[in-house]
Figure (cartoon, rainbow, N blue to C red):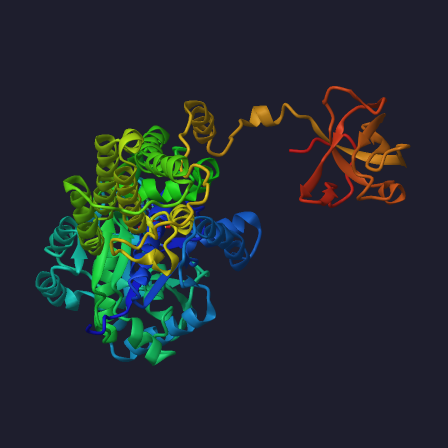
Length: 627
Ligand code: MSP
């Protein structure tokens, strides 16, 4: 077999300022499915994802929080890292553009390009959208507004550094035309060629520090930082050893796929190739742009409060069904609509009915009629041969679709086959057959189980956990991963398994929906102020007898004294509390705790077993309102 080039797949690096939603999750799962598929074929694979951490929005958010931008990034990156862990993403590396090796290489690239005359200094005026962190030409604006954010951009005039992108226009057009796989799908390729019909301008790659400090300093002028896209795009090469580890870089580059959403086609299909050309680096093989996940035909956005968070779905339904739905329901290159109803419908029909029921049906019949041992396949008739032939042809078909990134079709083809196994079972009715011809019934069950095993194996990159549970239960010995017919061992025990995909009841669906409808559990300011939070000083504190946890406090609040019983005895000695100013909910209905009256509740931060009381940083009168 000829030595296959290693497989290198990337996702965009996500803006660290946001929290992951199903759009981010989709691209990442897509890359994960492809990586798992390639690894299963023993192909050397490198899967890269990460976060884009420089730029104005990060700087602004950090300033608002009163912390350093780096600290803000360090806090925010965790959301992505933990979401990917939960989604069982198997990335080989997670790059952060604040990684020091990345910053160093970006500076080296800039210096090289500057020395070669590819970057020059120039005064420039333009329409700048903070949301996109880029300049727009007047033509690109829609009604004078940024087409992405629908906000009027700022007109800014300043001296900056420019990359000679324009000189690569003809080369790029020619490259795209002569490499049909370079930009996919074709609709995006045509979009880029359309864009390139207009004169291509040089690219402003710097920002003056007077306006933006949070970025990679230009090596040839320390008054400037690098434009965030120029820094971000380079992650695809810095992460695999560009200018640091030649052998590593040569092994993985050029990337097999840069997976992106359609929102970032220009930066990836125009800026990036011209940057690489100027650097003298080979082009990636394919830049693949998928559509958007929409909610009720609308783009998800914070302001519309319609962001679907993958973690909420996972908590409710498990990781594998979420991965399955996202990959199954987005058609190559097109937008897709997300709704909980659609998710549940898809789950119940494909996973609970078609797949899950088949598994339990086969297992139950084997348990009931064959003592739980996989029966042998005796003589097979026409129906058996048809199933076997289809099962043998299925991997080639599904792999071909996967190689074209038509993952939704790959899944549909597999599930259609599963449905055909169900029809075969209906047709052969082994539950009846067993009464007259046990051997024939055994043949049917073996045929169905083996066909199901092959179908399951094909779904493994999409639903790794559930499929592994199933495959481990099927007695196949070392041949668990093989597509050949007949690997399922006969005469071996099929252990009892809980249902793989229990049906989702409508009630549960309604509950989750309610949660989704209030994605942030938002409340109004008036609702917040219904709780009267006030400062209070602790006058005395003593343990409540015969309890481990309770303290009885007398607190002073605006001249009055109140008694509060609080479960903090395991955390504080009474003497340490006296004289401290704390925060209490002053308008809580009085309650009796262990027969002792409590007039209010004190505020404490809790995590696991840790607890700390909320108190004021400086002295302030008691009774002061908190909010
Ligand atoms: N930081 C840049 C990318 C730099 S890559 C060198 C960026 N980040 S982002 O956080 O906005 O993420 C963009 C990517 O997230 C999209 O290209 C797409 O892959 C994914 N999605 C974000 N919203 C999406 C949907 N609603 N639907 C599908 N995917 C979308 O742009």
